[in-house]
Amino acid sequence: MFGITVSFVVLCLALSGHAQPINVKETLPHHAPFQTATTHLSSYLLLTGGYSGDLSVLSIDSTTGNLTNLTSTRQAGAGPSWASWNPSDVSKLYVVNDNAGANATNLHRFTWDGAKLRDVEPGRSELEGTVHTRYSRRKSAASCLLSAGYGAKAVSSQALDQQQSLRNAKTSAGVTYKYSFSGKGPNTARQDQSRPHEIIDSPDGKFVYVPDLGADRVHVFRYANSTTSDAVGQNGKQDGSQCALEALAPIKTAAGDGPRHMAFFTATDQTGSRNSNAKRGGRAPLSLHPMGTTAAAAAANKTYAYLVTELGGTIRSFTYNSTTGQLSLIGLAQTTRTGIQGNSTELANVAPSEPMISPDGRFVYVANRHLPHAAKQSSRAATGRGGQDDSIALFSRNLTTGLLTGPLAQYSSGGRNPRHASLHSDGKWIAVANQGDDDGTGASLAVLRVNVTSGALEEVQRWDNITSPAFAGWWGSS
Image (spheres, rainbow, N blue to C red):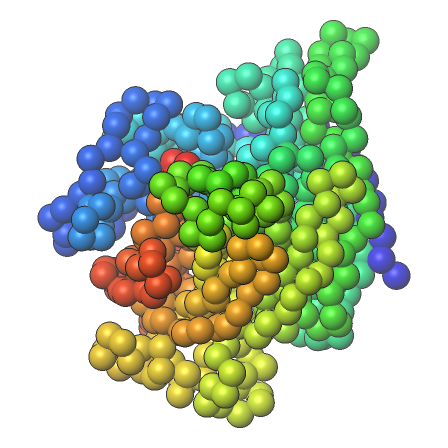
């Protein structure tokens, strides 16, 4: 039996002590220039976090792809595994610690001055195992921070004030709406209960989607309050109702699929596109639309969604209905190459983690984990460095229909177990957080150069002196 339970809480936030920052070893001489103004950052900054406790800001040389560590901190707890930011003021950063319990400090607001991260507001999401957070795109007077609790069987939508604070006694900040799920799947080891793994909103900010790895569905919400500002209660305080959600019919997948993460793509016109990878949406202008003006006009303003299923090893393609929020399935593909070497058990264990869409919409990439050894040999062949890596799969995307073809190729992820990967909005770089095996081998932060014409990938940088990275996002990429 599946269901959603709604509850309403006001967060009580507590300060905590801070460990001394530990810097990642700096081995590279090059770094890209970046601005120090708090509201405008260079697009070539990379934010990483993981289960070592380190939260780091790195710069990338836009010509060579070389990385330089700018600063690191351990003020986000033992497992800063995901981050989100306000795209109009990326100096304000929200980081979750999924190693903390529901009643512990598991959500932090940082500020960035161009040189240092400062933990200005430790708080709580009220969700056990918070694995994902998202700064809402909703265009309203209120700002909302969305969070997914993998262990909590729930998601939340939290009101922020005009200073983007998590708490404020005179405004709606700190008001949180919580939505609990029921249901489970046939995989007893991974689907013993609902397992929300991500929370992401549509490019137009109208709807919210929650891939539920445990219940084999994507929960769909819309914002319950259609007005332009919060209501004011008898106490004179805003009630945070701009951030309240209303559940709609979920999108069901096949039993045992285990939906994990998704991304949207919208073709806006003949010269540009808008896409939303799991980290943050981006816009990248194009000098010439690759499919021509007639086809471009036909495809303009159509939105598609792409969902990877961790347990099913697939990527699903959907059309998006901007009126109802419903997603209609149009395509399904395995994320490993047809005929790849490996027995059925090995291939069944392949676990895609992250979809990425090129800014022009011509290519889709999927990070694959737990490939069979023979497949890893193939994915590493281009670099000639052995057979121990997992892969990034390349698909071509039809610009008119949104359908995928492939995988056309498998490229090295630059390590093992790529938990997260992100494509820069210029379309030229992919950053990969390879979490590594349980014994720590294969962990790395890798940078891959993208051939924007063919979609091919080339590894240009690999940091092996890193422990269990879980997130690698292009901070300020827009």
